[in-house]
Image 1: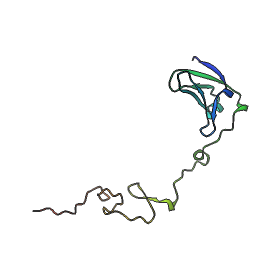
Image 2 (image 1 turned 90 degrees about the vertical axis):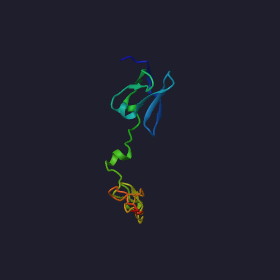
Image 3 (image 1 turned 180 degrees about the vertical axis):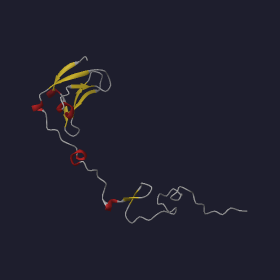
Image 4 (image 1 turned 30 degrees about the vertical axis):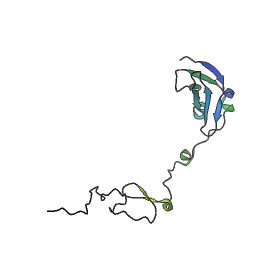
Length: 125
């Protein structure tokens, strides 16, 4: 494992929204390492465009607090509000009070719930 350079964490750019530290790579891309990786003891940032890697010099006491995302905090998935709409049999979201289309299944594709196309034309014999 070869390291291109050792960089102090103060020299990296930190995006608090994405919680990612970045540093310019000579290839034109950027080395990156997440705050979570640093808290887990990782100290190697990689460049996604080339094989170069840098070692980050830091102390955990100097790291910002790790902020959990909303999805991970409560562990509950957001299934939406009844007022926003409901899912029909076809899995498509329907607004409350929306009527079914001509085909009867509400998806507007011209077939019934079984996927069979109903013809309104009569065959000439």
